[in-house]
Amino acid sequence: MTIWRSAAAVSKIAHAEGHTFADGARVAAATETHRADAAVRRREQLTDEALDAPSGKSPRPPAPSPHAMPATMPPPPAP
Image 1: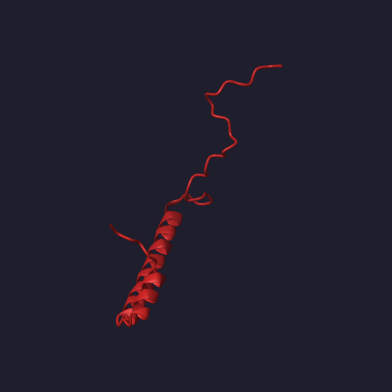
Image 2: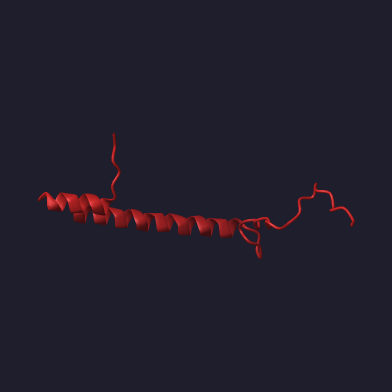
């Protein structure tokens, strides 16, 4: 059986038992690098989408309104 715990909970338990995490700084640096890389990829993707779109138009079609009636739905009956 696996018991899932948050990273903070694991750290508290380990610290209470006298354990330390020597790779904490390395892991933090790797996490920050990963976040920065993801941000660059998102910016590049948005730039590509904007350049591919016809001028003056949004790169994505607008989302359908949740209040719009489908074209196949008949009109409501007259009272």
